[in-house]
Image 1 (cartoon, one colour):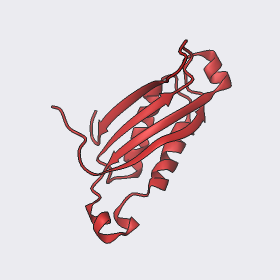
Image 2 (cartoon, one colour):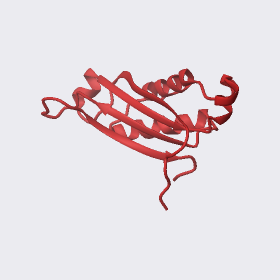
Image 3 (cartoon, helix red, strand yellow):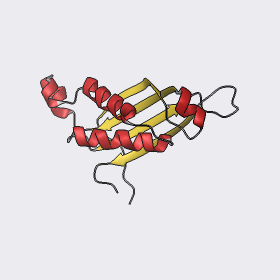
Image 4 (spheres, helix red, strand yellow):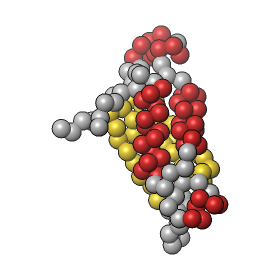
Length: 128
């Protein structure tokens, strides 16, 4: 069964972090920059009508949960980093129904002149 990711969303893009994630030994020793894009699906109708934060989800709090998840431990795979972020967001914010997360690694240890390596995960609450 395919589900879509339509509807209201809170979006944060190009969140920059420094981390030690990666398979290669030099990634664990030296670290590198990573960027994270998020879209979190939640019903924002009441927030739009009331203009009150208590009817929404603070993007500052979403950022803090994402940062803590990113820095909490070292992962070999950016797929695991992304899943860890998703898990923490679902745990922290019960009204988030789905998350799209992209973890970008612009300095991946591959011979590319420009660009980045990245993964993108699409998860609904309760998927397993």
